[in-house]
Image (cartoon, rainbow over all chains, first blue to last red; front, side):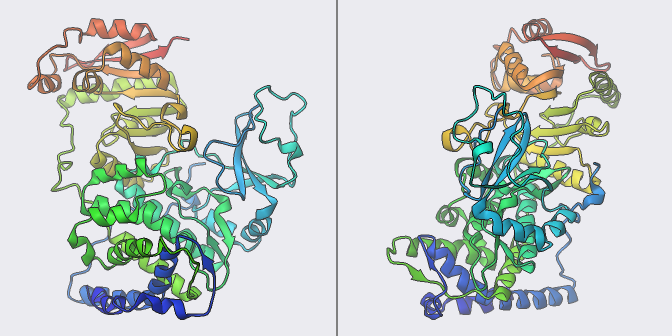
Length: 82
Length: 476
């Protein structure tokens, strides 16, 4: 939630700011996806960091999320039977 | 000899799959040579294969082995003759996946596992200076009990500061359907069956409830993404994209993975929670049934089993414990999900749980009906198990016994089938609120209907119940 609040401030920024960087590539109709990605990638570091600290705070107060059992560690070759 | 490119393998100019004498090959075109060489020489291939994340392959030759071309079959597809194909760079022989399954046949946890695998593969690729050029859920298969990336030609040399081309596809193929399953209704997974390039993000935005937007990941990658798509879809001039530094892209992938990991689907509180069939047998009858099914499997020695109506796979495991590759199909997403989670915990490498509505099985889809094969085109199974199933087909779905026999004869060489008579409490439940127009639903009529397609090799009553088990072989 904290990550959301921090990020939402940034998300209100004018998306056209991404258009002023140096020319990298010309893209076709999927342009929206690329433009958004450029914006989100720039923010992702903050989100990742904030999330990390948020999880630490939650763990500190015993609110850590329980581990999910659906994906045990990816099966390496040792788990293959042939 | 059949060497035509397979039906799903025509969009990517880097290469295609073809079959020769029943063996699967992957053609690498010259246009992809630099990328392929980078994949192999950078260490990325070895890293991914060693981690069980990429399907291994053998390199057959630098051109193409003409093979028994001196005796070409008349049905040789004209569009591809490998011996004269000058665009070819290499031919690979990938390890073959036993059964090709599709995202619309996966449970929530399976789709989520495939999503996380795709992100892991992309993260690893970046470390080795490569990137995935697409993020299709169809690039993942379940093989030996785990998700594995199968498209060797999806890797491209990473251009510094370039965005991830697969981002849009990742959101459509994975994030949107997972969010819809998690926040709306598990049945929305079926949207993947009608949208082969994933769920359109504007549709996902319309369907998701407001509380979904409290999830920062869904807000950004679905809601904002849909907004950006609609805003720029009518832009006719080309637009400039700001560079995406590698570190930022890695952060984006980490954030995406975190968003996917947070998505959960819990059957409790939904209509699927009460998933157990609540078998009506006594414990003794169940033990007898297990014994008889086990004996039939030992007798039939099948290489592959399809367990139709498998529930959470209790009887499927009788087959997998015997080392038999087994698909456990069920119509209930909670059963399939529970079964998948259990087989992952158990590290059962022979079992693959899949979603299937037998009354409306997966059809041939996509271009010319050939991109995604129908269920029957992916068969037949050596042996089909239809345990505690026939009353659902014959009574709940009103399918005549003869048609059930016809259909099973297309799916299976052999059959272990349980007949559940009207006197059974389970059938009584089905009949409780409907007019009993099923005069023909008798043991005798069942045996007669199946005798036109199968010969009975063995049959045994299940002590402690009125049910009967049969081992049958399809008539040639």
